[in-house]
Amino acid sequence: MRNSLSRPSLPKAPLPPTTTEVPAGFLVVDKPEGVTSHDVVDFVRRHFRLRKVGHLGTLDPMATGVLPLALGSATRLVRYLGQSVKSYIGEIRLGYSTDTYDRTGVPSTPPVVPSVSADQLDRLAAFFHGTQSQVPPPFSAKKVEGVRSYQLARRGIQAALRPVTVQIHSIRLRLQAADLVEFELTCSPGTYVRSIAHKLGQQLSCGAHLHQLRRVAAGRFSESEAVDLEFLRRLDQSRLGSLILPMEAALDHLPSVTIDGETETLIKSGRDFSWSGPPLEAGSVVRILSRLEKLIGLAEAVAGDLRQPAGCRFHPFLVLSDPK
Image (cartoon, rainbow, N blue to C red):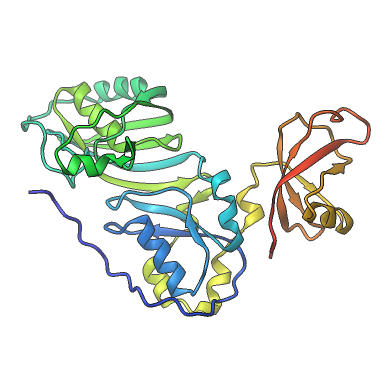
């Protein structure tokens, strides 16, 4: 019998016809276990009467931790932030594998009494580190001929999933008990931690599955900025703005150009603009900031006159209509 997670109750009141005016930006939620990322988005949207809310990367229902949400016009920036590096902590249970590669599934291998040393785990951490080809779990959202893999898996159909290339930037494995491994992991987006747990069990010849998972950082967003749903439930709508991180801060890994009012008018008309700062490589992406340091949009350095004394020419490819 498949395990089931208790599902916290998230109220779903009808969305009122009028919405609350809040600054566009990012809200970092500490997602609890047992709810989907979509559940959290839906709750925030309805509870605070917002029209536009999106997340920057799905967490499995079993996982907890950092789930950054984009509010208002910040949803247009999701595609430029969702590919950020992710960091996790968690536990891997040794002794058997499951069909979902985590503890919510049913055993898929016979139980084995594991015998693992710290040296073995150190060698396996080195094995996992770096670029590798990873096969997604059968119970995943990957599509096979237009059908989600987990839908096929529920029907007992074994789909051939294509491997994907992922990057493990750092990984630490520590034996907590004879059948329990604690880990710390920083990896590229699209990495399935469940697949790492499953592969670990194969390498140790004892089977393994993901037992606990918590995301502690997603790009520049960390758990120190995260607020839990219980706090949000009690929060007055007028105070939501105090928790929102500004759009320009979320993109602070990109260089910026500050423009005057006249140039801002040109940009909002979709026209290219020049900037007198140091020349940049063609294709470089920059933040466009107003004189008040508010994000206007994003632009790309255009080839042709980048080395001229006048500086750089930029082509805006994303302009925000309401950079509040």
